[in-house]
Length: 397
Image (cartoon, rainbow, N blue to C red; front, top):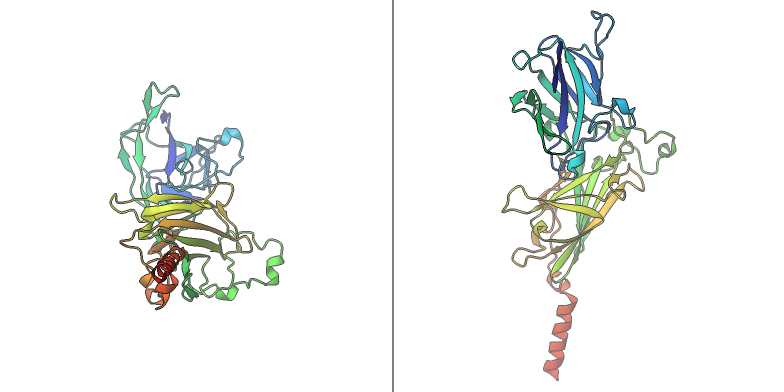
């Protein structure tokens, strides 16, 4: 943004362009390695986690002398003189598809012992991003055209003296060995429930799980998160922190109804601004969604089979920790496409499910519920039955 006698003042902006994966509490951690022996004199809107060895300085001590500093966002409610635009949210970044205004975070820092012109500045290296855990891989910093700014009256443009971009991508495989959620299935035409497969999310924590009726749950502080984010899971067959249940509820003449329930089995974690993404061919014709917000995701213009669901603000946008309130649910009404709709061979069940951007484990296809042989008669609508009955009476008359 500007040059100083021994360096420059820069603004660091984090944009989360992921449509349905946000960075939740305890928030992002951004780090890099300086190309030379640069120091950070001061920051606004964020802070370095370590000051490092600043013993060579006398009088004015830098904010951080670390060769590889790491930064975290400030918490809400800090003094006004420490705040910066889009800062101070505890490192929480919303998903771009859910709320673009909350998917941005920024802070300002003054760098010293650095270059004082475009030719002498050296770009930092080895960028790292935790969001809040592992999974992100960052590329090299690349110089791009300077950022353009508009004055408040929008009649004049100004620009930064120099701008560089770093792109970080997320991989679920790098983040964890096992899935973090699973899917169970049921329907009105079959009494059995297709559960999540055993040990879907790994059974390493099975020895430390808690039964739903355990006296431990009445202890003070049982829901307090640990510094290492170690979960306290309810004892289940699948041992997943989150389960999504898809229930085919009703079959009408022109429509069919589905109920979706998401349950939290972690006693130490609640999910603020959660997102649920479902892929199903009939999501191209959603008539109504109850209790959730819904947004279609159309990565390809010719294919509209994926939708994002998230909670209503101040109503159910927070999935509480495990317990009586640790679930959110909704129903959706879908209009049938007579050329494709069927209840045979598990067609009514989702193809893929994602919770907070991570893919959930579906049951194996051979475990899906099949339509009973007598289902055709059972699935006849009431109106069809009345029509046949009237026709029979007319014929007899």
